[in-house]
Image (cartoon, rainbow, N blue to C red; front, side):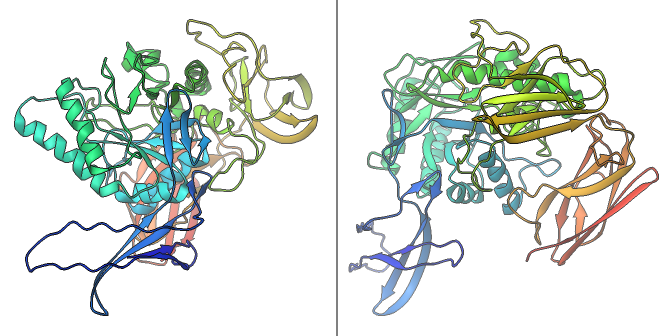
Length: 555
């Protein structure tokens, strides 16, 4: 067995450990064999520095290699307690998470490895260090991406709102646990195994055995099971109690985690979180406010609640209902809503992201269309924000510091932010007028960030982009393609929801889904599967407007 340091650029690096031992096997027999070795001064896997190694296992007959397998691993140590929270490599870390369904429009879960990576990249790049794979094991490429990106993973067994006491069903659920952990236990990104059936009520005896099986498959002190409590305290991490949509700290002696927040507590299936980009700025502001209100409330439980995960990162089609669930921080085509911009600004300047260290950023939660709300929020990791309208100063102020409310307040009120690292800046009585709205962010009195929104004119131009998210377009890929409607100054026409757009693939790919759709919030989104051709040629037509885009595809 060889331990080989892994290098992303070169594929392999220097050998750092080696162990060899004889093994005598009779024909047709099976034997379990254990080897141990030490890596001196290892580079530890950590979310901000996800160092990886390759473990090469060779079976040799004399000097001849008869079988070989490479397993990519990371070296790290984790701990979860009610007193310390989550600790990795002796460093405490709050788990800032989102839930992700493995699903794309039109094709379901038939997603390319590149598309899987793009989702994980977008999650990591917007302030999340944890993803819960709700509610089932996802493709191995997802975990490979998380290993590379430093994205911590909570991985559930399959199953949702159903339990059958028949022995056949029980046996299958236990097999699911064994299969899941055997497949994925070498991934350093996986920190919790959700060994219960999501939103189900199996008996205590079933849960006890599920936990025992997990620890059998992952022996030692680095296996942490998790699940809904409903009065049960046998998991290593007990999810916070859930009652009518509200999370409350669990009453066990175990550390807690909020598996889902920011959606169901605001109206169940009619949650005010569930909005589309086409619903406009009022709705999108509500989406982000719900995120802030929940985030502030539940962060107060730390460290006994080690973190939480928003439901959900993306809008998604669902089997339980015949409509799309719009609870996402981004839509089905991965376009951000205001809620995602809020979470992005919760990162401190210099924080690791896959695109590079976080900078100072500010975002106005408005597209500045006629009829815009006179209450605005600016999200930013800065000390002060100045708001200007057509060059005039509206106000310059510090972050929100009004008190929190024990009961939910339906609109931004300048409070509910004391547990947030970077509270928003709420501006009241900002009367709309056509033109340019600018937010200027300051750190220690110096300008460090700006964001400008402009009232758009009529649709006079288009361009074609795609969801790149850390991975350039390649052959045998699945691309979300955007046709963006703009005015003559290049401002996106966010208020445009009805204009028909047609996309043609002239070379290098095929459409998955309709060729003609109506734009939503100024963007028409399509799905294109690329072929082995080195070039993808796209043409968009809308009324008397036409544009083309050529993309060179990576092999």
